[in-house]
Every structure is written in C-alpha cells, then in structure tokens.
Length: 438
Image 1 (cartoon, rainbow, N blue to C red):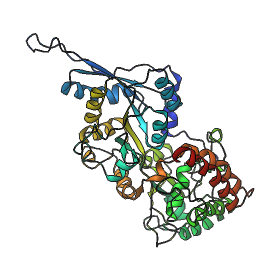
Image 2: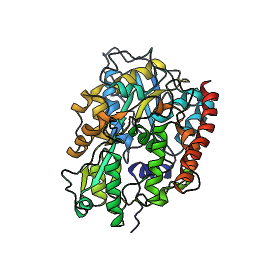
Image 3: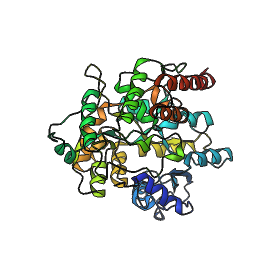
Image 4: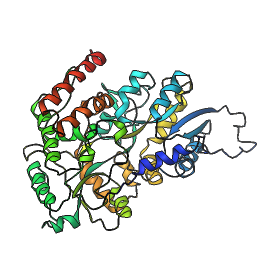
C-alpha cells in the first residue's frame, strides 16, 4: 500500500499559502499609561518581524504571549509580527529588500546564510551581541549560524535528526526491538537483506537530499568541502564510499526507487513507506515519535542509534540546523531590533517559544522550561550531541543540491558510474567555488 502523508511543515506551507499574508496581532498594545506615569509622551519605535508558521495561528498562540512580556520590559518598542507562508519565502525576502521594503527581522534558516550574505540582506551581529547574550548556546549551534567566524542569526529552535526503528517489523525479522542496534553500515546491510525478503524497505534515500548525502559522507569519516572553501573532496574515498552505499541500496531494492529523483519538482507526493509500515528504519526529526504514532497508531516507534561506516569512525546523527532571528541590513531600527532579538534569545524565552510553537529549543537552560513529550526529550538527548556543523553545512547548500541531484540519480539508476557522477559534480562545484570564494 502506498500512503502519501504531508509533513507538518508541508501542511503549514499549504495552509499558510491559501490566504493572503496579513499582519497578525502579535503586537500586544500596552494599556494606557497612568496620568502620572511620566511616559505619556514616550517616543516609540516600531519594528517589523517576518515569521513562518508553526501552529494554526502563530500570531495569537506564539507571538502574542512572547511580545506581551517584551512590551512590558520595553514599552518604547512596538513589534509587528507578520506570519508569512513557507513557500517562496527566500525569494519574497530578496524582492522586498531590493524594493526597500524588507522587515527589520526575519526568521532565517541556517542552510541559506551564504545566500543571504551574497544578496546583501543580512546583518552580521558580532558587534551587537555580547558573550553573555550567547552564553546558553553550544559551540556547534553558534557555528551553524555563522560564516567565516561571523554570527548572523542566533538560533531559536533546532531540528534534531536521528534514526528510528519500526519495532513491529524488527520483531517479525527476528530482532528484539529493545536491544537491536544498527550502528555500522555492515549491520545496516544485513538488516536490508532480511527486510528485502519480506518485501520491506530498509530506509528511504532521496537523491535530491543534499543534507542526507552530507550525513552519509560524515558517517564515512569524510568532508565534502575543504575548510577554506577553495576545493571539494568529491573524488576522495569517503565521498566515493557514501555514493557507493547509496547505489548499493537502490540496486539491491532496499530503498524505494521512486526516491531516485533529479529535481525539486519531483519531491512532492512521494509515498511514505515508513508510515505505511513497509520500511524498517527512517531518519526522523525529534517530535516524530509523537506525530508518527498519531498518524498511524499501529507504528511501534523505537528510538534508534547514530551511525558510522565502521566502528573506527565516530558516529554522527545529522546536521545542526534550525531557525534563528536575523536582522536585515536595510533596517532603519537596528537598535530596537537588537533589543528584541536579545530578549527572544534569552533561555527562558527560547524555551517558552518552543512550548508554544511545538518545536525543540537550542541551548541548555532553555530546556529547563521546555515541556516536551518524554520520547521527544529522549530523542533530543540521544542524537543532539552527535549532530555536526561546519563548512559542509554552510557552503553552496542550494547549489550543491541542484548540481548533485541529477548525477546521484544517474548513478543509482546505473546510467553513470559512481566515479563518473562524482567527477561531473566536482567539475561544476569547483567552478562555483572559484566564482564564490576565489
């Protein structure tokens, strides 16, 4: 049975895109000051914030409570939050900046920091935020939101990726779900062979998932880009090993052939074999242990383990990624914008926002006020420390996906060898590196 299921973000993309974007009442107007308060003639600064939906009404559910607290502390700053649809968000921001109509602040994504810099829309924050402002962040969280040592968007939420197992299918394959562990590629291949005997899939691998390929390379102990971004390592052994694994899994029938795609347009509507109980393992985000079981109560969701090619290599679970507050370089209210960002990245506010929005907070102290489902907390605690950041996560992300996707597709379909595919990718990517970084 094929079952197409919308992810939480896809649902919100669609629902947000149905209506014309409008400014929501996330700015909580202050009560009229008492006659003797001394601030009747207070000058106020208004800042505009673009956010993207996590709930059915972020204006009331998320930003109403948060901005009420902010305004109590800073009555001279009025905040207008406009919830934008996810679809086309980058292009709309670039167009607004070009027209001189960009917001003061927006909810930025880690994977496009280089593009924001190239477009000239993002303000570096090193001179505007202090060490105390950033004290709750892990080093990898700072790294993921920075480029060349400059911080651009302090994170407010994380996407903690890891591995889940279908306990029911494992039992039918002769494994004990409570103790089963597939941490090396050989262990994974053995599971794939057993799963194939029952016409089940081992996992899903999209040839257009650049993040998924980076994880596979790092599982092999490698890195795609050199630290100075002047060269790529596509012909080095770890990258060869990564694509060889993908080719093996496709050719053995351990992953769905439908996921051998070569363009963005082919990503929509793919069947979800994990939720239809035909796939033994899956890469999932932190809250999936709740959301997936709600989607299919028959799923026996088991939290899995990070992987590496073999036991000599440190296992990784995924990429440090998420959303953060960025200030546009066109803002004419930078001081007020910085004041709001500083308030919103305080651990208490980061944790509170995560509770209101149903997301995962970054940092340490923020988690003291976070109230996740127990399985979500376990997932974050297991996989969070094994996420990686660095040059691979903020170099030519979108460009790499577009260049590599068709070549990965050709390799897994047997239309090109691994070496031919990687040589083609390297030629195109190295030209982009030269153009971008010299």
